[in-house]
Image (tube, one colour):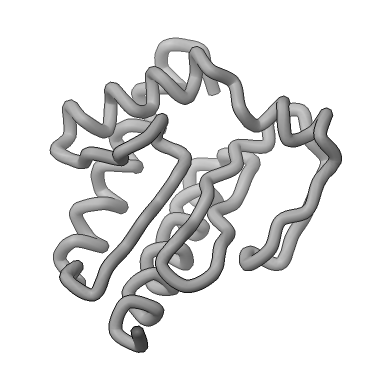
Length: 120
């Protein structure tokens, strides 16, 4: 639905801006209400922020289990339940602009904590 698409696009844009601000190599890409956060540590790759195509080897580099688990725990500690390992995003028409603000703030804190423990 149109409301969900607008919300999802705003969330992806703000998270991509956050990755740039924190100098985290990666992107949030996806279409409609679904998105994926790719932390591209050691991956020289660019995408259009909608569809991210990469080799299986590069994809594997973006899916560091220890880093993603730490990200998930940090997000939970900051009030966001990512329903996954912190790299998958699902939105709905029930979300609000405040949800975007809260989610981006939680990701900023969580990514900073992941960096502080040496996983980013």
